[in-house]
Length: 203
Picture (cartoon, rainbow, N blue to C red):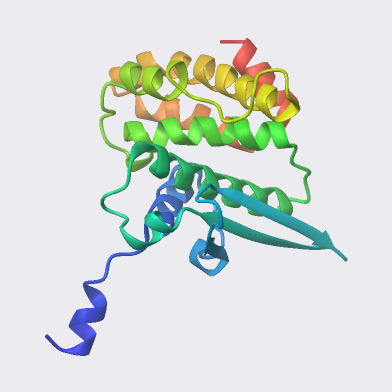
């Protein structure tokens, strides 16, 4: 095989593939996340943001195994990659629009994005047992930070709110009413923290 054929057969990285799905779902654009990704020191996802003189610098740390063996990672590692990509895409879009982003809305958006990627919604496919995916991601979630801590409570709240929101979408997903569910997901993505919570509570 010539050099051109070899290069064309190389799959995009796992973060890039997830980014492409989410950008298509939400109708947004962002720089290639691969230019911002580095292996994490502790094996956990982390996004560092630094803003100065009107510029935003973003660094996305992801588990090394997700960057090296993208086709054989656990659900936990896969969801960490989705979370990192979600944070990156959301921060880029909020910065482009000159809007702030709170830590809670970042986590809430990431929880929803885990569901839409794992269930298949982000690939515009018939979702795989959406209620089972929701149960696995939200009801069976394990938290690294203890209840009562600021970070732990924020993650738990984001988990609860996201579970309620996606459960509202499941009847449309099961009956393949794609336009309605995509419209609601895009509206949720565009909303800030207050609007996101209002959409959840209206469910």
